[in-house]
Length: 337
Image (cartoon, rainbow, N blue to C red):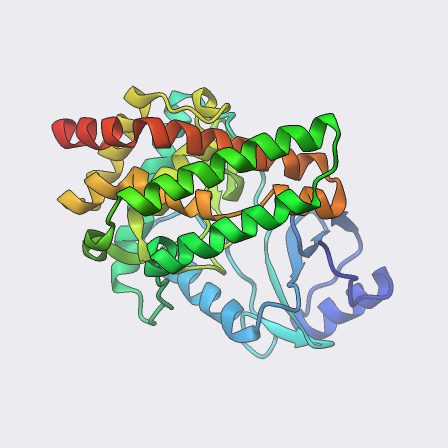
């Protein structure tokens, strides 16, 4: 949900940008995309007003990451300094940045052709490799919370709670069927699998939300990767398999094109060598993460937003595919890599 902007009118934006950055602005267009308030200035700059949930420290961390990646010839935004020589500013308790406008366009989920899909893996490999010598520490994600017995128990209860909120109509009955199937998968995995070997997964600095929605394209190729505010240390294979499921047009219904996915992993493996645990547990890690989540269904029940419901249904389709094919995926990767 987009928060109310801190700027009362366009004149306030013009005055602020001139006072803080020394830029003379005569044209402002609001960009209605994402969860931040974003403005295009003179068709040359982007002003981004971050949500209050993001601290200035988090934004400054992103700036350090962006500038570091630029030195490694990775296409990322270019930030503009204030007159005081800073890359971010606090105004009315919100963090503000200005960056050069990047011409191009975006793709929605699962619109990428084969070449664009493999390019996504290549960029991810380059980014993770470059972040190895990042001059700051990134926060670490504790994935043991994903596969612990307690986590499965909590997730089952969350899904059962959603069942109690459903009505007796066609849409809610479809949701009920999906949730009952997710509960069954959760119980099966909890009772029959041991994931303690996941402690051996390769954990490195990564984007944190790497997917096709973070790309700006030009002439069919990636022209920039944006939004590193969630950067952290986590198992690289989680973002690897997740990013594939978001971009490949052949995966739009939740199933993978296994040949393309193998090529995808091979491309990433050119930059970051995966170990035997990465290869074995990659599909299981993604499976249990989205199985544990109620995202999409919970939001639909609260808001009746059909887009969120469709996203929840897509994730359940991915769960079905991975539940049936995780072992096949792992075995095929082991043979091919």
